[in-house]
Image (cartoon, rainbow, N blue to C red; front, side, top):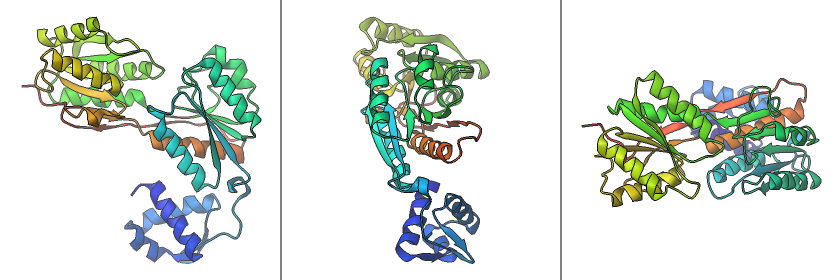
Length: 344
């Protein structure tokens, strides 16, 4: 059981019963007393429970910033249909746990719509923002970000050094680490000739950074990168990948994102390429990778955890405006499936 799930159980127990013995919670949660005391310390620090000898009790009054009437959080995302649903879900669950309300705006990867949606959220009375601009913030964002008028946390975007968003709190998946995990998995299976397949996106540079670092540090080789169109791989791009596989210059692929990986798999199968016999494939994002045939090994960013962390950063900023900023990088995990196998 994750920490967030344990917190929800603890809060539900204390709400329903008024007071709970720690010994009872140890049995209920199936954790050690050390772990439980750490959870209780976290919840007590936020004013959600009172610590008493041998147990916890329900506080008479929740902290003002946690009360349902006190805090409304605005959230801007570029999409509500791919990748971000789980980020939204994590943010919503954490906001609800803290007694806050989450209001959503979707910009559909349009800079002008970013600004329009944020203005509507602010005019609607939100007291803080979770921001995922349509692209990585640059100098063109400086005036906009400086004039928001409410605290903001950058979500799944990297704040460049000295850039306009560099002083904002931020929570994001460590995509370079995730890409490294995917390439290392291929290397551990014996694949020494690898390539990356990707389209242009706000996340692609960080995935590319991790891919190149893994190739360098693990002593791998290959053609580097195959680009694909925004609508998916074109016939000529598919042919370039097929040729590299047939010539033996590529035996492993890291494909970002996994919708494109599914499309690529379909094209490769039509061309007679066998997966994983002829090429092993690791997808990136793990949104629909498990639904492929074969099911795709994938790197899964911690999307829900990013949403939860972003809400906590924002609440922290609202409670303590003068604290130093934080940039949190949460680590993805590798989920092995049928599309990768040892090189024969």
